[in-house]
Amino acid sequence: MKNDLPIGFFDSGVGGLSVFSKFRKLMPAENVMYYADLKNLPYGNKSQEELIGFARNIMDFFVSQNVKAVVIACNTSSALAYDSIKNDYDVKIYPIIQSCAKVISQQKLLKVGVFATKGTVKSKAYSREIQKYNPMIEVCEIACPNWVSIVEGKLSDNEDIKFHAEEMLEFNPDKIILGCTHYPFLLNELSEYISKDIFIDPADIFVDFIKKDLVENGLINGIKERGSETFFVSAEPEEFYANSKMFYNPKSKPILI
Ligand code: DGL
Image (cartoon, rainbow, N blue to C red; front, side, top):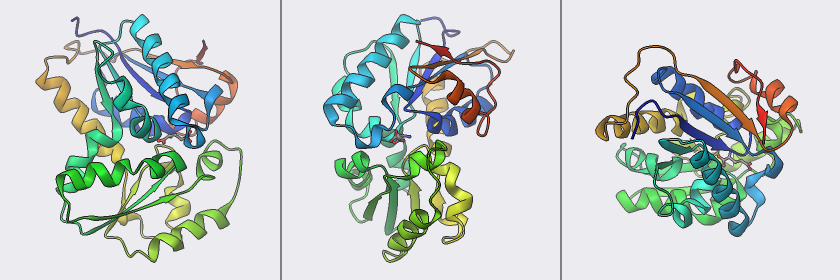
């Protein structure tokens, strides 16, 4: 295994940039690729079968690019596709939910709220993964089907954000996980109803987990310069470029594949 091989990140759209940008800051020497599956966005309302198909296509693409690891920077795909594909590839795969649940479950919490897509909530992946490590934690998962469209700039609906925020406050959570990589981009809007410090952005825990695991497995790129970055989309390259600038500022335009 050559340590300078790239790491592939994927999500349905710009949401995974919340993970990608933190990883870039933490491990700037790594060569990285980001794939936004805009052709199939939103993932949140797709069937498990469809999500497994999308994940396989993207994994096959990244394998053809000779990556050393793949980061599933998408909660919905981690919840519904990861288990079915995890043994089929010869590269490290990091799914966001499964990678973060242990750390979250070790915090002193009794009630944890989760905002996520319909698919993630239906799968109960957050409840299952957190309670696997700490069965005493009560988990309340709330689906917010419109929020991805709000972040992708296709919808503007503050009433919807208020509605789900109030719904969550009835549960009286100690912490709330932003269980979709798009949602951290709504933190300002959410903070009108819920204090910012209650939210957990799993991306912070996730990038630390990936770094630790790369180190443990001797997979770190030892070169000191800043690594390369390449963006790919399955549709709408101009839209991705315009939207992504709000969150990351990519150096190059995405390649349509
Ligand atoms: N951002 C993804 C997630 O973390 C998927 C959102 C979507 O496409 O519905 O779940």
